[in-house]
Length: 552
Image (cartoon, rainbow, N blue to C red):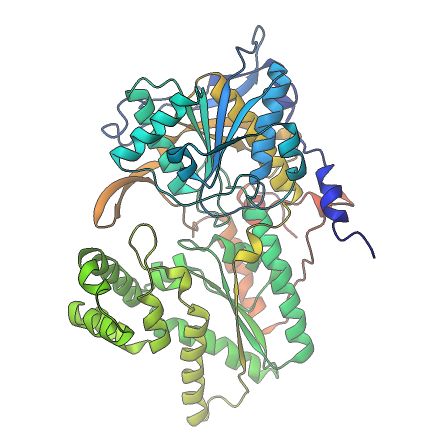
């Protein structure tokens, strides 16, 4: 029998690439970036960490390491490929700068901080996780640190452990926690630098300085392999239209990237639908028109990509979700006391506006019940659990049946639903994500050592070769805006949506008409780790387009 883990062992031996300034980590320092003036949009929420300058990593003469810091690290939120390499980069940078490592991992996510549950992360512990997927080295969790008691507990833990730094690896919510922790520690004279790392497969934690979150590339290539496989099957069987829902809770970045990689016949982009004020009926007609055109060409098969948060972009369903979130937050006790789904549905219809109630009653009962499932940690409807792929199958089936009755459609329609989500979160990271995360770990080590609290590690020029990457750091507070959570205004990091005027979407918009009826599918295949660089070291298509690198 062959070695079923041969690839895993080979990946452990991969040495991630570093930009030149991080290769010489012993002589690297952080300095203010004069081209980026300090900004803090909400100084009243960040009085102790406002006005921080943007930083860049540079090799400076006379720059030497201080005492070896004692650092804690936590994985927060959903898994994303490359998280282990951040920790390993942090470990290796500390070792190279100081000859020793004092690195502590918090177990099970932020709850590990509150409960002081830790493990020492030495060379032996981390060795099996080099270039591996998942977060199983120390685990993760979605605990929010937001109450006064929780902030006090976090302070007590870092002081008990005598930490000089806390590195928070997470998405927008987790880095909001990092910003608030940095503010709290600074205000309470706790000398522990809090550093954020941009993680989320959704791709919605990005700015001009934070060009992309780690894990996005691996997830999209994993999904695109599967989409390509399904497209090849559709071409072979010639009898199914595949409705594929893709993870992406609030933005359509994954759907856009996968469309660029696979040339699906229809790809819904929520941000575009919102701009056009498209209704559920409009989207149904859009999909049905493509299916009908393909049937006229003798093609009773196809691929439709749907971002998981799509219903929050359509006016009537967006209103419904908004009213449901407010209602369930306000009337949670009364609602939770109801015993049956029918009683819950009747309660909701009675308390919604006429327009929202009408929308609720019009959708299939199965989807109604999914809208009323347990809420997420913010008290909101769990949109990811709503089977929008089945919702559109139902609405398109009804539309095509109507057209068949009117004799305007004579094709065949057999739909297959799919949801691609967890498949992409813990895969072996691509070379891009492995290199990116390892470099982020090095930047985090410098930030902690130089007591630069309230920053998120970043790298500019990521679409270029690694030796042209520009390591930097951005004040977390500069990413914050006010948003309604559980019915209250709270400071949170703003999610980045697909830019409809950006080069990635514009490129997609110029190509999609050719993909609708033509079988222009591309088949990316599995992620490659060995071979020619143009195969192993690709960057996300959308990132390459944003930085004007040609995409084939």
